[in-house]
Image (cartoon, rainbow, N blue to C red):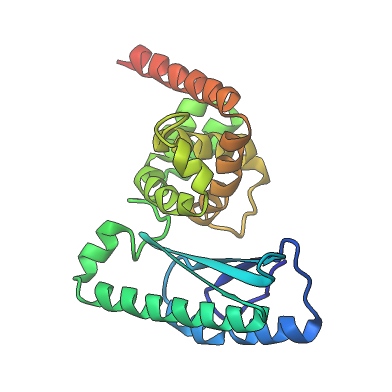
Amino acid sequence: MKFSDKSHNLRIELDTKNSGFSPPELEKMEKALDPLRDPVRNFPVSDLYITVAYHHTPGDYHVRASLVLPKRTLFTGDRDVNPVSAWIRCVRKLVSKVTAYKESLASKPERTKVQEGTAQEVVPETEPDAEQLRRAVEEGDYDGFRRATYVYEEAVRKRAGRWIARYPEFGERLGVAYTLEDLVEEIFLNAFERFDDRPEAVRLGKWLEELIDPSVNALLKDPEAERENIEAVRTLRETSSDETE
């Protein structure tokens, strides 16, 4: 279940698990989120995940929340026999944590924020060569496509590194089943394969960001097969580089 939020930079996802709520309860829960919306307005990323679970023993509701922000994921929770009360207290705790986090950022120079990724979107170091990009896709030349999109490499890597904070399972297997570089390659491989379906109105950096989720899920679903694909295209790129030297 998702709460709509078109006027603020806050994406919200609610998992009620084995709990059911009436429309008035859901309305109160959504209203309680208002104090959190303004504090996260200027963050490039602010994704809120809330889980509400009912426990027959001891007969209460457990509300858990994780708020994904640049370079930081804030966690909190609360329990109560009244789920709305637990929800409200949980949100209040998050507001306090966000306030403290923003205060810590305020003491840093803006350049440091950008370097750390707390004020960064997926934007290229320089504008890509549109003709080179188009020709690489038309010719099925992945190595040429990667050369054309290299200006996005560092921004995608930093964005993906922050993005995976919402995937504890991925984080646990990072460095064992795959690396962050594998995820970056998976994102660009997906971009190459889906490039003809990219909406023209969506800028390339934003579209690459939208490919992070499906790329993470693909690696989680079948890491061996995806790594084989990744290694194959890496070998292809290395071979192409050797031939041009």
